[in-house]
Length: 361
Image (cartoon, rainbow, N blue to C red; front, side, top):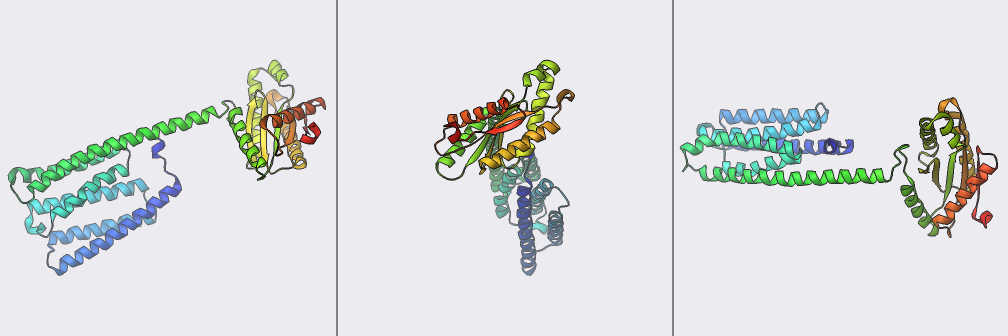
């Protein structure tokens, strides 16, 4: 499953903006620290070089983010890796080259190192986060291990050992929670897929009877509350059994798919469309009176007759139209739509007929 790697464009732009703000703050912090340490005479040539390289890298990353020269994920991981590298360099300078790193205080630095592991899991999935975090942890361990072996009673030995113990526990905890979150995400994806399948017709990919019945119930509640109205259209293919008998069920399926595509174009953006069952389809169009509904149904019949041709033979449809009223139930509404459909068939097919509640009474 690759759903977790897909990021909406709007979310990606937001993350890019956040990254640019973080880099800007880091640049200002680097310049301030460089100036303060210089005023206090704490900068060695090596620390001057570290500050200069940091400034150049941060400005380059900001420019790449601003101009969108590199993928967002690559920029985020670059910032993460560089932050870890700076921590490693500072640790090495303070432990092994105190002449150049005497101004570096490791204890505040150690407090920030766990954040590197947190961001590693935030910016990646649980497996990649474990690999990145373990690699960074191994790097810190390799840098500090010779110092610990030779200076077990040194000023930073105890705090460094605690750092590694806490880091290992933190990585294990982050991996556990990240894995749990990933499993929950996959369960949600599966649940969404099952819900979609349970409400979708396999052949036409339209919503099925179950979903359409739910939509009608919701719209009837709006009508009963006086918040709108809708027209319901029930239509099917004329002489569909003859198509199957003459051309085969594959041609029949093709006719259904073609009708679904044609109806989708007609009702796109103005209502709901579903395969009701067999060769019957249903459309619900909101805020449409009987006269306008008949015109839409007539247009649908004409478009189907002109465009759908299974096996080289044209097909036509019959359509029944009705309009919901406040006293309607789903049964009464469907009964009128069904009666209107059969009225269209009795009138010669390839046409639409409407039946209002007053006419039914």
